[in-house]
Image: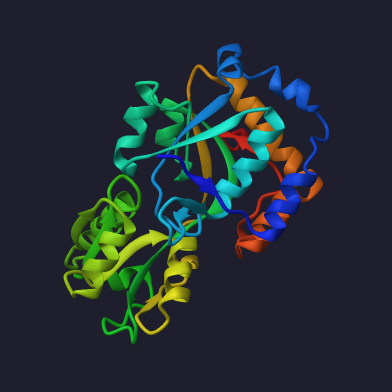
Length: 282
């Protein structure tokens, strides 16, 4: 399927006005593998349906979100087109390893475990939270409030966080968390609406979006209760040149203000970074 990216006004202006500072566009493009430059298109593995990162408009084909808008700016600077390939989040990493995708971009959290297997280029801050029914019937005020509850998690994303809290509950002599695994936020929220789970664990920008769009249905626990992190591009270990090129165009967009314009347009300014890094530059 071919996807069209609809940009906010600020994002469109940023894309039109973007120009690399520091390293030139030519210098950065030279770091991209020759075979990729000849192909002319960057194949990106993603799992569409996680606002405000990336999601469909009502027509089912137009992509919205801060990630496709930023990617349009960054790819343009490298002289590359973008081919989005959507799949379940849990399958993305095997797709990268089998070379079905050149890179992954999907609000993927930077973790030490992932750094051992892949190259990670951080482009924004991130965190996670839990969404629960309006009125907070289970009186959830902190992460320890989750002990003994039923939690929905998304496979390969927030699952490890809830599992860790469940172990902490048990170590404290409390009942652990009953965990149900779903393949997407939408499935988890459906289970929450139907009462099959008490909470759903999601990334904090998505949680804020769901509450904003459904103020009569959901509330969320402040993400300050959970350890913050970063989100990153994921690349194969052997693609150091491409990783440096991506870091370069991210940094250029930070320096010229186009990055900030897109982040502001999507209400993401608080999660902006002032430096693009690879593995947090350790």
